[in-house]
Length: 114
Image (tube, rainbow, N blue to C red):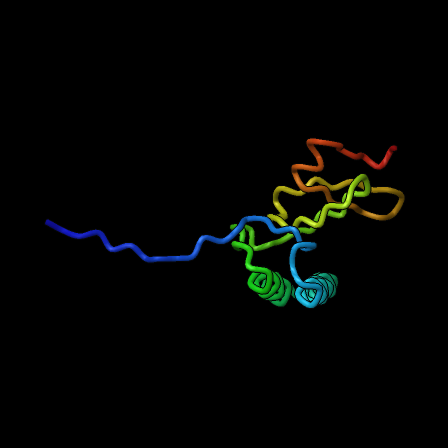
């Protein structure tokens, strides 16, 4: 009889609320995400992907298949959720883009026309 081989990987969250982490981790995460945004502006997508990977590792989130993280910047509540960017709901308020996580979008979807 054969035996199944199973690798043991720790379960990681698929989303994390930054306000539940130490401020030093929050600041380091924000710095990595700012660097990623700058890399994207310069079309350095390799650096962008690496920085998202580092940011995810820093906060202990399971890296989504897209490799891209988003942070909820909902203007209707105080949500600090970091999650898979493919699940983000975005809206423009003037020239500023805001991001809502699925929970915020379901509870109080914003369009920028409020």
